[in-house]
Picture 1 (cartoon, helix red, strand yellow):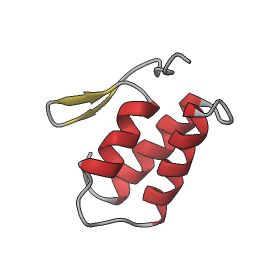
Picture 2 (cartoon, rainbow, N blue to C red; picture 1 turned 30 degrees about the vertical axis):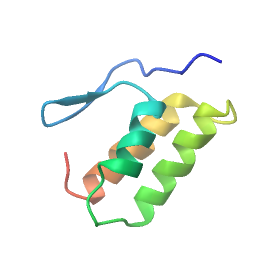
Picture 3 (tube, rainbow, N blue to C red; picture 1 turned 180 degrees about the vertical axis):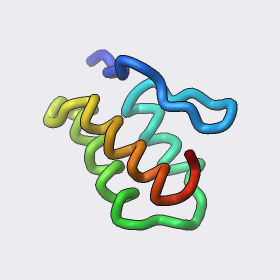
Picture 4 (cartoon, rainbow, N blue to C red; picture 1 turned 90 degrees about the vertical axis):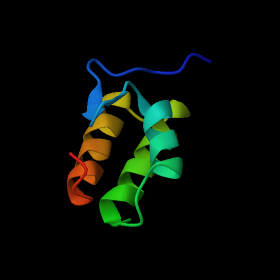
Length: 73
């Protein structure tokens, strides 16, 4: 199975996240201790996109909302 990528990357500082696989990795390993409801939404959306049960672009929107919630944008 090929990993889905987004139409455009999400930038966090000097890092670029190009799809739900990288976003999920960041959520699991690079996220600060501020985990709110948008974090949970983003994690589920990324997992769904990777399992082909969800739209990768929806995962991008959810991930961006989680970044805003955690003040990481």
